[in-house]
Amino acid sequence: MYTNRLITLQLIKMAKKTNKNTWELAPAPESSGHIDLKKQYELFIDGRWVAPKKKKYFATTNPANEKKIANIAYADESDVDLAVAAARKAFDGVWSKIAPSERAKYIYRIARIMQERSRELAVIETMDGGKPIRESRDVDVPLAANHFFYNAGWADKLEYAFPTKRAEPLGVAGQIIPWNFPLLMAAWKIAPALAAGNTVVLKPAETTSLTALKLAEIIEEAGLPPGVVNIVTGHGDTGAAIVNHPDVNKVAFTGSTGVGKIIQNAIAGTNKKATLELGGKSANIIFADAPIDQAVEGIVNGIFFNQGHVCCAGSRLFVQESVAELVIKKLKDRIGTLIVGDPMDKNTDIGAINSKEQLGIINKYIKIGNEEGAEMYQPSCNVPSKGYFCPPTLFTNVAQSSRIVQEEIFGPVLAIQTFRTIDEVIQKANNTPYGLAAGVWTDKGSRIFNLTTKLRAGVIWANTYNKFDPTSPFGGYKESGFGREGGLHGLSAYVKLV
Ligand code: NAP
Ligand code: MG
Image (cartoon, rainbow, N blue to C red; front, side):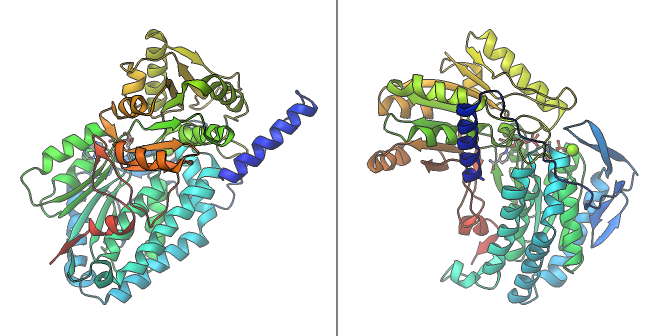
C-alpha cells in the first residue's frame, strides 16, 4: 500500500507536469453486491445466535452516507452473565483439556476462512467504519488473518515459547475493543487468547460491531466448540459488565485513556490480570539528513492514514529547522493530492470519520487550534456534503503547551514544530502524558539507536511509520497503557507461568 501511494504520487506529479488541470481519477468503487448482511444481528453466545434478554437493539450506520446498515443487539448484564457462563463451561469442559495441536487446527481454520472471505470482510469493515477500502483490503483484513496464523503456530509449541516453564491458561478472557481497527483488534485479542487455551467474551465498539459478528460466523463455520468464543455487542455498560463480572480472569482493553482508568480502578484489588492499550500523541521526527520525499510520505502515512483514527498516529511532527520550510512545502503539496471521499472508492486516501460524535471532537480541536493562535492549512479539496468527512489539516506556529499538541485528537490533524538539536527534540517529544509510538527519519544509524534509547515510546519506527507485524510486540508507556500485544509478549499476557 505504501508502494502504491508512492506510485500514485509519481503519477500525479507527472500528470501535473504535462497538464496541471487534466488529472482526474475516474471513480473506482468496490462493489458490495457480493456481501451478505442481515437486517438484524443477535448475540453470539455458546455457539448460538441468541436475542438479548431485554430485546433491545441499536442501529449501526455507514458514516460515509449516514444510512442505517443493520440493527445490533444490545447486551445487558444478564446477557453478559450468560456469555461468561458459556465461556467458563467451554474452558473447563473442552478448551483447556483438548490437545494443543487440536486448538491449533481450529485457529488455522479461522485464519483460512478469513482469507477466503477477505473481500467480504474488507467491504463490511469499510461500510461500517468509514475507512478507505484500500486500507481494509490491504492492511486490516490480511493482518487480522495473519494474527490467527501466527498464534496458531504457537498453540502446540508453548513449551518452546516459554522454555523451562509450564504455560497454563488464565481462564475466561473479557476483551473490549475500539472502533478504529474493528476486525484487527478482535484478531489481536482472540488469537493469542485461544492459542494459550483461554476462552473469550469479546465486545466490539458500538459503531463497528459488524466485522466482529462476521468473525463469529467464521468461528461457527470453523466448528469451534460452543462457548469458546462469545461476542456480545452493546454500549459502554456492556463493556463494564464484562470488566466487573466476578468470573472473568483477564481483562484486555483497547480504547481511550479515560475508560482505561475506569477499568483499572474497577479491577483494583481483584485477581484479574489486565492489559490496557490506550491513547497516544506520537512524535514523528525528521532530521535534515533524512530522505525528504520518503519522510513526507511517512508523515502522510502516519497521520492521514485511516483518517488519523490510529492510536499510534504521528500527530506531532518535529522537523529540523534547516529543512522545515522545504518539508512543510512538500507536505502541503502532497496533501493537496489526497482524495477525501467515498471510502468504497479504491482511489480514496481519506475516508469517512467514524461517527458524527468523533467529527464533532475533531472540529472542536480545529477550532481550539485556531483560537490558540496556531496557523492552519487545509488544501482546497472536495469534501462530500453527506456523511462525516474532514480534510487533512496542518497546524504550524504551535506551542508545546497548545492543547492540539498535548491532547489526542484522533483525526487527520497534524501539529508541526521545529527543533535545532537532538537534545531539544528528545525533550520536546517526551513532553507528553502518552508514550505509544514515535518515528525517526535520518540517514544516520547511530542517531536512530541514540533516540530509541531516549524516546519514551513503546514502538519506534526508523525511516518508516505505521508498520505492523503479528510477530512484533505493540504497546505503550505512561498514559498509553501497559502490557503488549503481538509476538511472544502478546501471548505471554494470556498465560500463567508455573
Ligand atoms: P473508548 O471510548 O474508550 O471505547 C473503547 C471500548 O470500550 C468500546 O468498545 C466502548 O464501548 C467500551 N467502553 C466504553 N465505556 C466503557 C466502560 N466504562 N467499561 C468498559 N468498556 C467501556 O475508545 P474509542 O473512542 O472507541 O477508541 C478510541 C481510543 O482508543 C483512542 O484513545 C485510541 O488512542 C485508543 N486506541 C488505542 C490503541 C492501542 O493499541 N493503544 C489501539 C486503538 C485505539 P462503546 O463503543 O459502546 O462506547
Ligand atoms: Mg457503523
